[in-house]
Image (cartoon, rainbow, N blue to C red; front, side, top):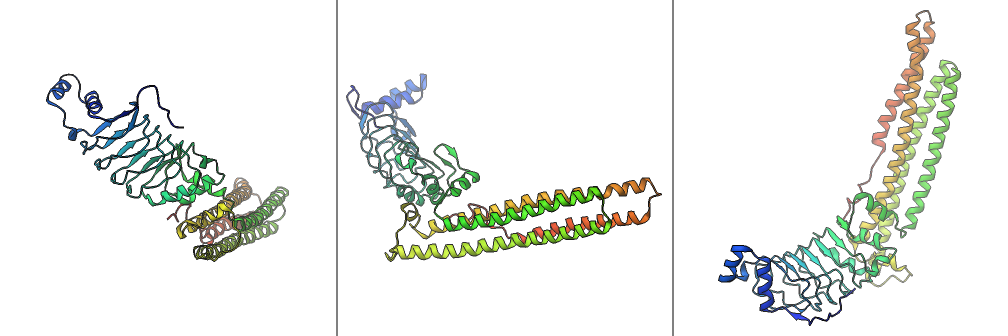
Length: 406
């Protein structure tokens, strides 16, 4: 992970090294020669690259007061120091060094991009003043505790985080923990974190077993209802094929409509049960958190569950995320069943319209049969309209995943 001392003697940043670096990275040809003769004012330098120079100690950078970008990667630096004068720094690269402790960055209040990749760091700390931080890379270090992620919650602008290569990434709760504590991340470990990824992370949570068992029950009820509707559909198709009387077709439409009403009522009950369960679960979680804070909670708790009880925002986010997923699954199941039912209704209407069109082509057909078919068609159309009307108000959709983020 760390770089060893090479055969080349370790260096300290001195005047000779700085002069050479500025000349190499400054203007070339005629402008470069002119600048070399007249001398370059370090106050005019905004970017400085000091990588691959076997630097052991950071020093003598106090003159670069307007520096915004500094590269110190691929050296053998052991300590972060002597950066207090670089108050305008936005981008700092200290990757591939031998740093063990995060320190000496307090004055860099404008820093947005910080890389400490491939060092010997075992704890994320001493970054409180870096409130503008947007990109933080600390992969390939010695981070083992998930608590390091909790510390990063204070950086409200953080959108890109790289922890890959740390022992903490091997924890089976890693992805779930990141999703619960840092819901505003856009990139994690070089991957885009979209809504689907967050859902996958949260769905793998095993901490809320009670909620999961409720969801299983709801799915069983919905599946049973779906099977009933499919059976009715097959029966209706068979009856249409043998063309029983108009009265039987009207009765089937009526029964189907009652099934639709029962279906939407059942879906509304599912949502009511889930909302009630969510309120109770949230109440229990907050009460448990208060007991833990007061050291009054004596019951045993798995370590991965206890990690969520760090503050009220974290536990509320986790419970709300679970609630959102349960509501989303109910909504998706309802949409699937309604789509199939609408397709069936369309086929019924088309089946009824066929004899009507034949009647128009053959006026000799009896008017009574035509009137019966028209009645069945009206009933089918009414069924579709009622299904659409009941679908809207029946759904009390929960907030989209992520809308409860703290």
